[in-house]
Image: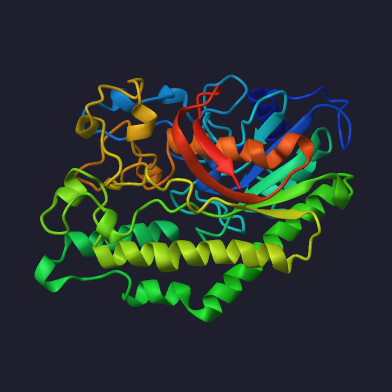
Length: 400
C-alpha cells in the first residue's frame, strides 16, 4: 500500500530518528547538524548486513528487521523503499545531530508513483500537495529549524541506470559459456549509457541538483559561507577480474560468491562505469561555481573488502561463525552479494545488491566525520588504513 506522508509528519519523523535541537534552532543557531541527500549509496541500502554468507542470514544480520525504519515510532519507513539504514554514513555522532533525507532508487529528479512503484524523491522541489516532496524541498524545510553546517550529496548513478547495468552484466555471464563469452560492456543498451552526449546531459542534471541544494539553503535563510556542500563520489563495489577469488568458468562465481560477471566486464565496471559516475560528480561540483563545495572521493573506500575480492571472503570461507566474531570486519566483504532468482530469499531484498553494507557504511561514516572536521568541512580521499576497529566500532580510515 502506498503511504501518503504529510509534510508535518515527514519532517517530524526525520527529527525523531536523530538527535536534534529544539524548534527554536535555525540558521546559525543551536546544535550543529549534518544532512545527507541522494540515492541508495548514501541512504544506507544494505546496511542491515555485516558481511556475506550462504549460511543463515542471522549470522550477518547486524541491525535486524528494523534496519530501515526511520519513522518516529521505529515501526516503518517514512517513505517505503528509501532504506535509510541506521548504519548510514551520516550518523557521525559526537554531539553532531544528523538527518538522512536520501532515498534508495533516487535520481536527480523526482519519480512520482507509477504502476507498482514507490515514490522516489529526487534532488528537486517536487511537491504534489499531498505530502510527497523532493529532497531539496525537504532540505529547505528542515534547514529552516535546524543549524545545518554540512550537506553530503551523492547522486547520479540511477540516472545512468545502475541497477540495469548490474542486472545485464550478471545475465550475460549466466547465459553464455566461457568459449563464447557474451560481455555486457559491448551491449548497445550499455554503451548508449556512456556516450559523450549522455554523460554531458547527466552531468548537467547533477550540476542542477547541486544548485537546487544551494537554492534550498538560501531559501531557508543561509548565507553560502555558513554551510558546506560535500559532493561524494561512488565506491567501487567489485574488484578487477584478476582479483576475483572465484574462477570465470563454472557457476561458483555466482552461486557461491554472488558476483557473476566476466573478468572483462569487471574491468569495465571499474574503468568505465565507476570512473564515469565519479567524473560526473567531480565535473558537476566544479560546474556549479559554488565556493562552498568540496569533493569527498570515496572511490577506493571498499578496496580490500569488495565483493568476491581475493583479500576477503564469506564468513564460512574465513572461519567466522557470525559478524560478531573477532576480526570479522577485517576478513569480511563490505558489499552485499548480487542475488538472482535462485539465490534471493527473505529476509534479503533484491535492491540491496552490490551496495556498501554495514562495515562499508561505517567506514564511510568514519570519513564523513573526518570531512566534517570539527565544523570546518573539507574534502579529501577516503581509504582504509589498518586492521581493527576504532573507538566508535568503525573500520580505521583516513581522509587524505
